[in-house]
Length: 179
Image (cartoon, rainbow, N blue to C red; front, side, top):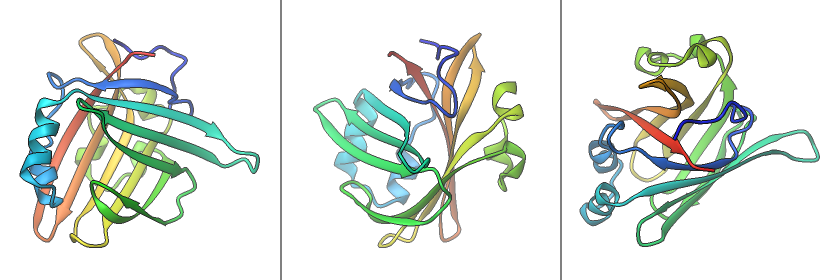
C-alpha cells in the first residue's frame, strides 16, 4: 500500500512491511555483516514488518524508534536520536555497534547510489541518513530513508551502501505502508 501524504520524513510513525518483490535481496549484505546462514535464511523467507514511532521529546530532540519483527516473532529494536551525534548500542543481531542518524539533503550525500531513485519530495526536502559501524565485525553501513514513486505509488524506500574492507554491497529496500 502507498504511504499517505500524512507520512513524511519528519513523521514516519506507522507500520511498514518489506515488499520483497520490489526490494533487492539482503543476503550479501547480511553475510558480509557476519550474520549466520540460519538467520539469513529466516530473513529471506520471512515477512519483515517495521513498527516505527517518530516523536519529539520534551527537550525538542526528534527520535525515530523502530522495531523490526519477522515471521516467528523474531524482533530487533533500534532507537535513533535524530541529532547527528554518535552513540553506541548492543543489538542482538549485529552485536555492538555505534551509529549516528540525522536529517540531510540528498545533495549532501557522498555516494552516488544513495542519491538516486528518490521522489521529487525527497529531492526537494530532506531524507534520513543513518550510519552504523560494527565494533566487532569491521563493517560500516550507510542507510538513507526517504520516499520514491514506484508503479505510481508513494513508497518508503531505504537505500544502503555497506562496506567491509574492499567489499562493497548496495541494496534498495521498499516498504508497503499498512497503518
